[in-house]
Length: 310
Image 1 (tube, rainbow, N blue to C red):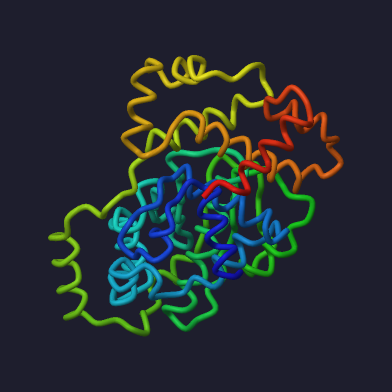
Image 2 (cartoon, one colour):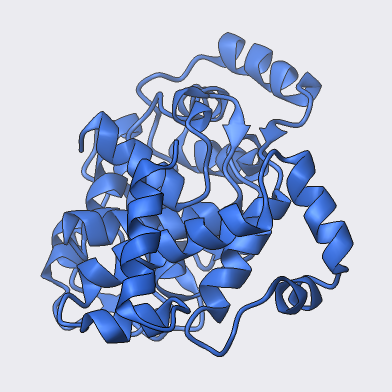
């Protein structure tokens, strides 16, 4: 994916460009889940999250990765990963529990989110756990069983390829990897007790990671995305939707250097681009009504304005 494509996806998910170069900021969970959907659509690949998860070995998540990789065994590394998920996300819970003498479960829980974005994020998380386990131990760790809450896809051969097992359940009550207890005792190739102790003390002393706050302009954008095509959209209607007053909303947008008109144009422009990609058979009249214009002439004039606006 090119740099321009990444910037376009970031804008579509309401992320500023500085996020692409930042290593210490957290993306809001709603934007992160939306990004998975956008990437799947951009690449036209329903298995993209599995592929990215399989490539996620070590070193991409900074301190969190090194806490994991310097542990003495896989089981202890996974336990540390669960204890310190806050270093990389506030939207995922990860726990490892021994089920029996021969089996242990690694459960992944997304705390917020729904729909396709949630499915893709969960696929990535489970695939990454298996990939990192193999990389850290140098062994072909094969789960006994994989469980997904999502419905079964039409084909799941890529799931079998990534996880190395045909025991994959869909529509399960939890998202879970069942491992052999013996695999949890596998030694880590990069185990380092002295460094591990230093890293744990560093992790305990760190301040909370910087988060990207939700702006009022992004709230307006999401409200407009939901409302366009469903009756006349006005600033009063959006203000009520966001539980504020028209005047307060105008003031908050001004504080962020934007206006109601600009945000309405931005939402309409994004929706026109999106509909043109996913439903190219829409007639100009249908598209104009979908974004709140009375006729195609008004839409054409708006499109000219969008392309010339700095």
